[in-house]
Length: 152
Image 1: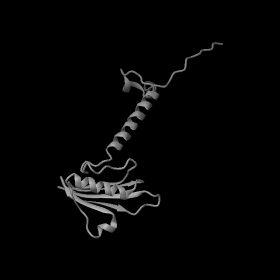
Image 2 (image 1 turned 90 degrees about the vertical axis):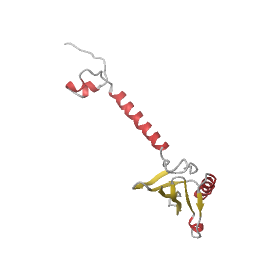
Image 3 (image 1 turned 135 degrees about the vertical axis):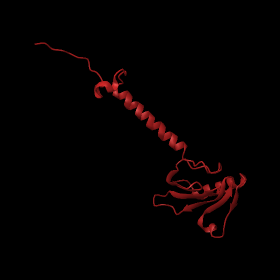
Image 4 (image 1 turned 180 degrees about the vertical axis):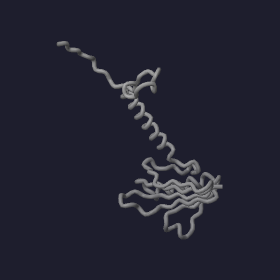
């Protein structure tokens, strides 16, 4: 009786994908392919987090770090609707944003009904008119902030 002992090997793409499909390609261990896929996915998530900010939004509107996109819509080439949820103090955010917009040259207005609704209306560079509205706090304690803008 003959006993043959083989060294263990890791499966490679060459052993999983047959024939000419990989002719001439050096075999990659599957674990390296999976690791590469995971790294690409992780990088995509980081890029998405950096791109949370809308390109039409003025620089003075800094979004909170825990912001989560609820809606993001573009209607035609000029109408934008965007909303986020956050655990940050929304009244404090509105106060900072209003001050930043005013000091950045945007025209900030507030109607009589806006005093009760917690909102900011503004216009300026590239924006015909825009409104930021704070919706009632959700059951999980997060605030919902809605941005509506008509671009020029």
